[in-house]
Length: 130
Image 1: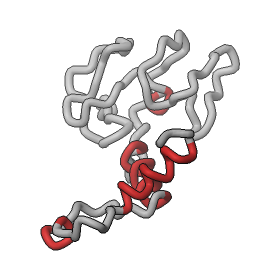
Image 2: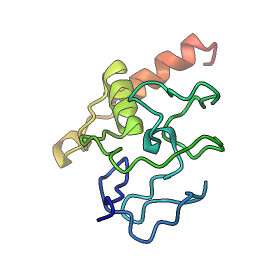
Image 3: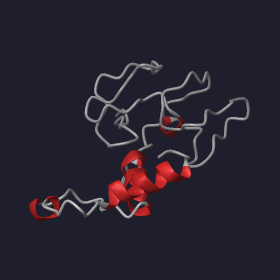
């Protein structure tokens, strides 16, 4: 029996996937690129073990690697969106709350500034603006 092909990002089965995998192939469930380092059997979780390959910087974006070999067991679970993590860290850096604003937090006196407005003001001063 053939091994089930799964997306490296969401674990969804990749039905009807033709091998060799095209660079433009994506997962129907999450939209992730399939011809990526993280979906290759030469990738060990951090590095490419194929000596002849020149690995790209982004292991999660489609690439042109000639040594790509589809790994059915690439899904490791617990995928976290890098952009969401980065946005949360940036919000924390500038003292902004990563939670969506509530109705009470949107009502403020005219003299008060939000943390985002204060951060923007600091950033403009640093960059030589107003």
